[in-house]
Image 1 (cartoon, one colour):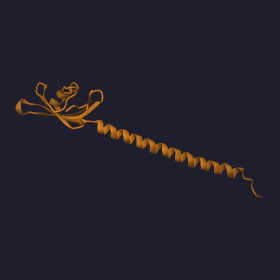
Image 2 (cartoon, rainbow, N blue to C red):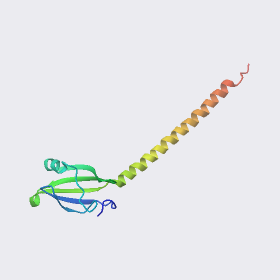
Image 3 (tube, rainbow, N blue to C red):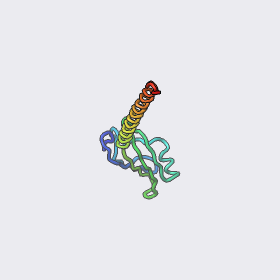
Image 4 (tube, helix red, strand yellow):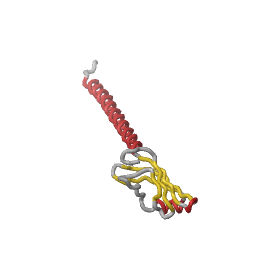
Length: 127
């Protein structure tokens, strides 16, 4: 599947020489390249969690695990971060609007209070 268009999760299987042998996701017809050192780290720690941008407009979150069967290798399970980023953006906009609304309400309340204070000080005292 083309990662420019699809939001579906995908898998990549690497052999012990760190070469991809199977993939369900592609960028411009190629297996998306992992950042350097990910598979080396996974070999030492058996698991790694990474995010990366293999091409402009594509951000991916992935979990990589090592396995020992069939000569060993690695399996990467991943998905696009586009939906997460859209949700974050929407939340940011909602919080921003709420914050500005609260500031405007506070300004209106303070303005009304200040107007009352000035009016009460300007009123002639009876006496």
